[in-house]
Length: 172
Image: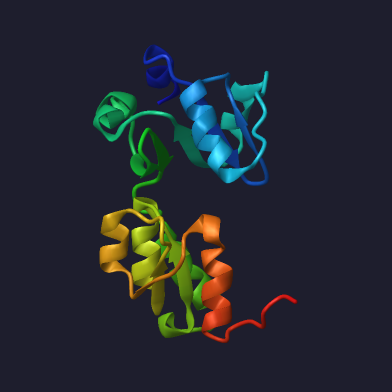
């Protein structure tokens, strides 16, 4: 996948267990990273990261470029939540499965879970939780499967939803 990304002129972010780093500068990738408001450094020893568990890769491509990126790879899938970037993960791994694992460890049922999301990568999570809430800025397909819709991220939608539903007290 890294070799394919290089042929495509794209840089990659790898998320290891406790940090993330990229293998160079890419304006589209930086736009993608900027949404998260997390600093992701360029790692001069990037290839060494492959010796550690990699939980996710992020690449600034469109969905129609996914086959080119994943050509010759095994056990990788791409899912988008941003128009010009994809998360690359194991095909059996998604946020819905993660919700199930956490609920199982806490001896909770799906109806005990509340999840918020806005991108296609959040659909499985919203379906796995007892209540799935789409952000006001969510993609139409996310809103379509959600149990409820809250205000957008820019309007503090999660906070406002939690206050409005008396899950938390307002901050004074």
